[in-house]
Amino acid sequence: MTENGSNQHQSHWRIPFLSKKQSKNGNSNGANPPIRLPNLPTLPILGFNGRNHAPRYAHIIGWGMEVPSRVLTNRDLEAIVETNDEWIRTRTGIQERRIADERETTAQLALKAARKALSVASILPTDIDLIIVATSTPEHIFPSTASQIQDWLGANKAGAFDLSAACSGFVYALDMAAAKIRAGDIRYALVIGAETMSRVLDWTDRGTCILFGDGAGAVVLAAKEEMGGVLSSTLRSDGSGWDLLGLPTLGSRDTYLMDYKYRDKSDDEQPRLMHHLHMNGRAVFRFATRVITDSIREAVKMAGLEIEQVDLIVPHQANQRIIETAAKSLKMPLEKWYSNVHKYGNTSAASIPIALCEAIEEGRIQEGQNIVFVGFGGGLTWATMVLRWETSLEQQPHKIMDVRQQAVYWYAIQRRAIVRRWRRIFNRLAGSPTPNATMRQLRNKLREQETTKQTSEEKMESWE
Ligand code: UT7
Image (cartoon, rainbow, N blue to C red; front, top):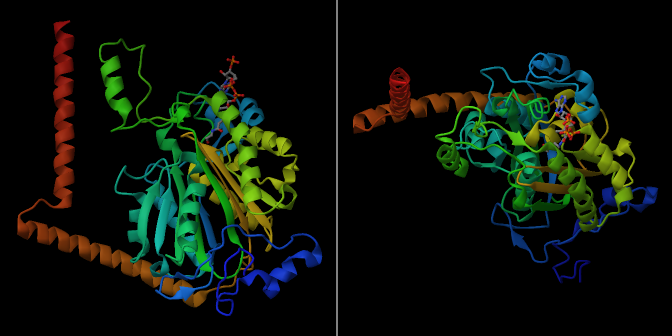
């Protein structure tokens, strides 16, 4: 019998509990005892090649981030809303944030972060099996931003979808990808958190516009037989708090209700802005400080660890005071909590992967360490993940791989141009409207509607 209670064929299925590396990282130095992994597969399972394989673990092998170059400081904000640097610093810890320029989109930031992650991982885009983009500010409601990334990267065998879990989104997405890897379905996954929050902020609301920023972070997850990587995770939601933090938009229930409710009201009873984020800051603050500690305790226990064995917590970067309150109630020194909220503000689903990249760059993460990610936000949602970091942090130059990656990116651009041109010709021959023509028709229709509305409003005014 194995330690997890199964009578597997030990000769083929030796669980690498006591690999040389593990015993070295284990009790010998007294710091990190060997991991008691929960829920190891008890039967041989079929892998991505249809072959039996040993239990596999999902390890982060690549990481990358991208933030816009435009910096918006607290002082700059003083000119926009009634606020001041001192209030923002003391209440949130934020000093500045990055704001995308007019032509910079969520997918573009995500793409740059993804390319950097692939470069660190030293794999080709064509190796990726799954792309998940966690975002609340996608390019479109659909198609997904992930599909766009798949096309731009030339990841021609990857499935792709966006995931909506607000600021917890990255941890949710990582958990989905890790589960596919551990199930033996896929070998590589690209998980991205990307946002352009500045596009959906109400720049007259000082309670929210001072908090958020734009950016993207990406990681590559890989299947490995070496024990470690993702050890445990807990995903939670409390939908009763749906109205505490959100972004009502087209197609949502609010579109209809607000139109109905406010149609005959005067201007000073403006509805909640449709495409703008709203938040009850105090209530979300209370919720966050309440759930973080319990969630971390639960996930750490599931991983077979004690809180003292956690080396670094990379939390969602919403507010320095939330981080300090959580550290206090978990009785963990603040040095074990990574924070860069002062530089980027709250970048929602992008905040954890961005913080991870900077933690690695600053040497805060070492091989053999136990790392915790914790996210919380709209939904309400919250999620914690515990990982054992086993990936080498010494980056080697991968010149040949870099050239091959560039070749795939170049090919993806050519392929897209050819396929789209061919589709246009084919549609024309078949007599069906081209995609561009469809979009043009739509725009014209909207313009017509707008003109009709304006004319009727002008008429009403002239009657009054
Ligand atoms: O990523 C998703 C998760 N989101 C979060 O975790 C956000 C959680 N919430 C928070 O971080 C905090 O609640 C905020 C930073 C949003 C607000 O901090 P607070 O300490 O809860 O402030 P408050 O809302 O209780 O407001 C205190 C005072 C109010 O004035 P009065 O009523 O006491 O006179 C506000 O009007 O501060 C005022 N205020 C401001 N003053 C200057 C609110 N925003 C500002 C501002 N500048 N930007």
